[in-house]
Amino acid sequence: MSTPEPATLGGAIATIAAAARTMYPHDALPDDVYARVGERLTETAREDSGAARTIGDGVSALNGGRPFAGLPADERLEALKGIEGSAFFELVRSTAVVEVYSDERTWQLVGYEGPSFDKGGYINRGFDDLDWLPDPEAGS
Image 1: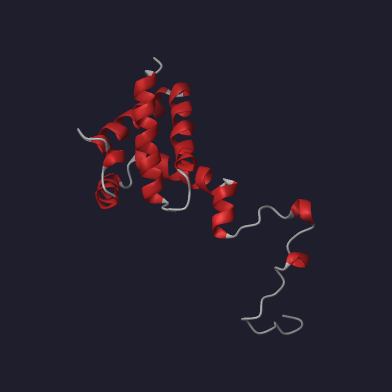
Image 2: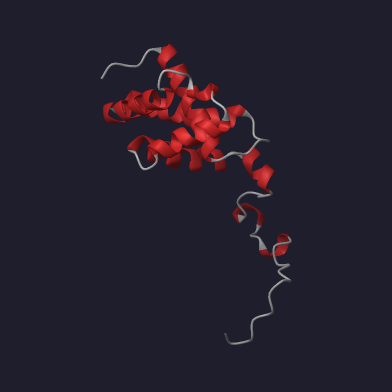
């Protein structure tokens, strides 16, 4: 498999990042959180010719003669709906959910304090304050 040209990769990263932001929109997150999705997939493309073809075809389909990343949000959403269920869509979706939501800046945005095992668990850190459900009956 030939390695894609750097200019092509840059365009792919921008397109994939815009797709990831459209799928998982958080205005307060910086662009580099979403760029990680494109970077991860271009790494995958370098290692796997099948993935490279899927990514190349998907990026071309989204760009369709105009830069997808430059489209208004509603047009990006419609373009993604048009490829929903495709191998490329699923590859971006599954990569984005991991890359975006494993970033500590996303954690801060949504109020997640991170893993608890190294802090002794959640119970004694304010997560035992469930007051909107009745207490369970003993023995249940």
